[in-house]
Image (cartoon, rainbow, N blue to C red; front, side, top):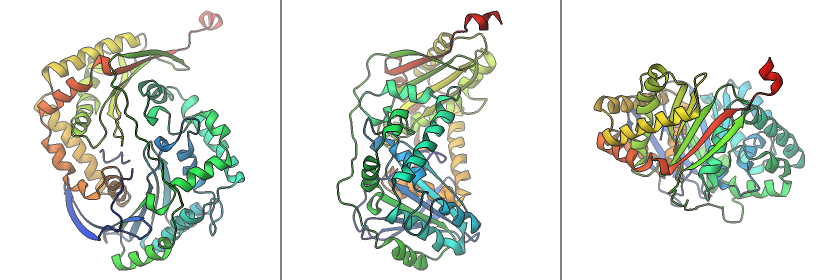
Length: 451
């Protein structure tokens, strides 16, 4: 798990006993305690009295993978609707209350989780808890709020994806790479599903997932444990869970044995290439070596493939790779944008040659150590922010099943060997395990060619 990339929730024992944990992550020393309310809300408290600030970070274990085909985009829709009012807070007044108190706030949605986070002056902790509890307990899911946010989300899809150069690359790749798993549709959803969503469908989705037993609340900053526990009990303790079992998808993606290839035409200035290979979920032993390999290959201008593609061969403007850390098996992807006059075929041919070299000869000790240092640096940077600490604690509880696993994460990184990296490259970064998309500009019209 990358420090800047936290993602979602994991079932925990009911009435888990309160416990104080101490751990060290890449030079960061943190203490935290965690417990469950009787209604299932999991609470993590991390005290730091350095500055009079507190981070209120709430995760719901619901993302786009919890949706059904034909009803996509609902998790992201609620990222917007959660600010549209509740019993005691009018529409958009959540922003007003937090910002008027000198705080900041935001929210995000991924395949696996949705999170809402506020950073406030320490004496405004109660305000943050009241706001989050009020919308957990009594969100206004009405025809009016649905229509308003439907329009907002549709415009967001147009501006960030459909009308953005290369904006559809990921969604086109995932749609072809997956046959069974619900990662095959984008977090923002399809335009048709957003347009056709009914109030009944949206309310059913909200009732299923936005409840205490599906949430994790982390406080980080300047507060006293006893008073914080009392406030949490006061504001969240009486919130009841909705009836009905939560939908938790699990689909075994068939093993890919033949390469998938396609061509996509788009309004782009230069050709591009995006390739995805199936890899295990983020908790699998092979994931960290794959994550390190992505750093070795394309993290920074001195990385192996950036140097080869951009500086030496001069066939690419940019290249990145990424091991998607997901709750279910993810993808290792490459995204390359060509230089003027170069083709996706040239990019792909060179990429397979470079990956063959990794499979045959591995990586150097220097490359591996540099990648480990980069990951450690990202964790150190995360430790400088209370909100990032809260998000990491939530992510390890929700996605890894235990916040205390943050304690040993650096040890798992340091334990990776050159042989581990070469092994996972040979196992996963193969042509038959790949979905390859060549992105091409629309052909010029006759008038454009004359001009």
